[in-house]
Length: 380
Image 1: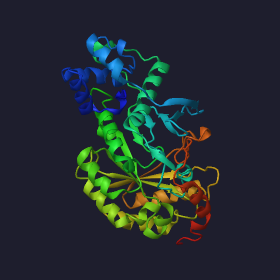
Image 2 (image 1 turned 45 degrees about the vertical axis):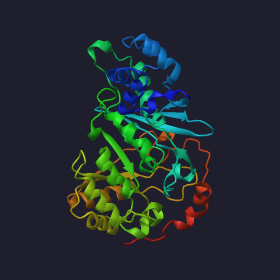
Image 3 (image 1 turned 60 degrees about the vertical axis):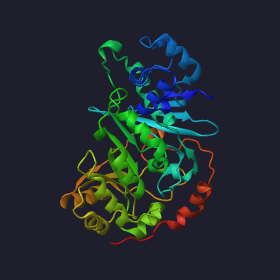
């Protein structure tokens, strides 16, 4: 039997494992604390576990996060890890420190099959879904690496106190999280588990391009804060920018957002909107957005486009972004403009590329089709 990676197991699965080893269920809770709260990967260091259990675990399990290929720190203190997930695939995770929070942006797939026009990840194609251990392993590695770097004091296992560095997690890195649903949900449960990372549902955000059936499932299985990559006020333009819209058009997507709010930890949906010069940034399109969302409780996060090699679109001018935001705000919609972080190390939104053995041919299709698919004119 192959040894199991304990990072792949949420609380329920850990209980099943320890019971299969002839141990009582509370041992799973101890094990979970050692792994996720304290970053232990060596069973001998788990001193309050029975020696018999440690011996069994040593033979049948391991704690293995993705291996670090490279680690960069930007002048603004943003950090990026390039992580090997086997074969020729590598993904990226980004830590963004702020005065009142520390946010980790993690990946859920090696590459991305959605192939949004303005995203570097989609242009490299798609290889595979990440496992739960590869997803939560990014948090495990970053959290405990940052703790060591910050030399945060610890009161030890007995006190149960954790000096956490990462306060927020966003599933906004490489990949479409809801296309990897079965691995993502256990990872979310570990992030929320008080014996693991203990994050609030309000502080874990999943970003989706609009997988309508999975949005409904998430509301029932593990509701966290939801961000939707919108990027256009009408189906015609969104079909070009976000090809998934052809399967789940705006009417169906917004209806799913309304349903999600019944279970959501926040009383609004966040809409992400990358500002593309001359493509989706006109005053008329701002008015169309207001009409589109209607009375749906929402917040808009305007994202200045971050360039990457081969991009066929450009960033809206700062004044244009301000005017666009002002129109949304005047309509009573809370609107923010994301401050670009980490662009000096290609860690900004839309720049994550990693290294992917494309198994789909998406990368080639995207390069051939990209320039021709951008609308040349927009509404005045």
